[in-house]
Image 1 (cartoon, rainbow, N blue to C red):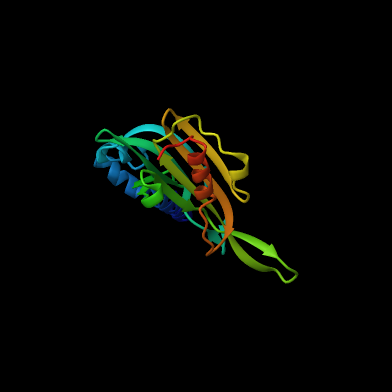
Image 2: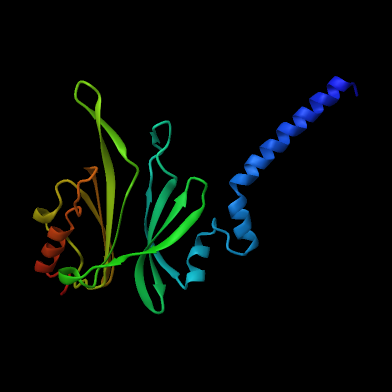
Length: 213
């Protein structure tokens, strides 16, 4: 092999080695966890080591692939909201999956108090969306918010009265016997706060006898 061919071979070998190093680095954390028996790509490895057992997946909320300031606005590909059991009690949880298919969590729901005692809530927002308006290209940030409420005090088939339906949000219902999850979602301006219309809906459900005290 001539010197020029040897030099070319070394360059190609170097490029290949660099490619393998970069590809391996992206998965290095996963490899370490795999060796320790806790592979983050394994969804169930997030639950079982922490004493949780999946009961049912309520919904997977996907994130749009939106570019922001020349790069990705975040790294979450979807958020999974589920019911899981621990020590004989069922609770609402969330776990997240990144664009690299790595899972993280779980995050436990917040227990509500006062008028809504006995309910659990998980809420989160998705990547900011640019909403262009006006004649000069001004922009304001619009975010998608999701609220999940879990309760076990249903007295009948949950049917939201038409007059109580939120005007600027959607609501989905999951129910199994006395257990239910209400999922509200809405697009709102950054720094605004709402609950998706939950309070009005829940009070209407109590008045109609769908849920108990």
